[in-house]
Length: 121
Image 1 (cartoon, one colour):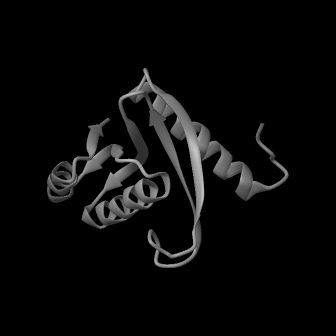
Image 2 (cartoon, one colour; image 1 turned 135 degrees about the vertical axis):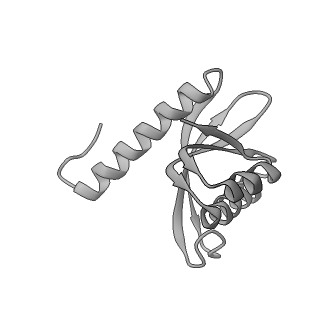
């Protein structure tokens, strides 16, 4: 249930709901959850902050699912840090699924080299 009395919280809830829908379509045989942890060491953003991502998991694999309209090389570093943070916290070896409408050629090459599952819409 979305709390519309708090605009920021309701916007975040809508984003999480939409990410869950994207993950369910992209990975239909996976359970989809929202995972949130406090990054006290600043691994992802360089400062202490709550980190939230959508997880699609099955018995064989765990995938962090991220969707962004456009992806450049600068975003790839962020997603790599996010993946490393999750893997460290959960003691897992997961991968990242990146859903996007547009990705520049260099970013796509780097993403694939890092084992990201890139899906262009």
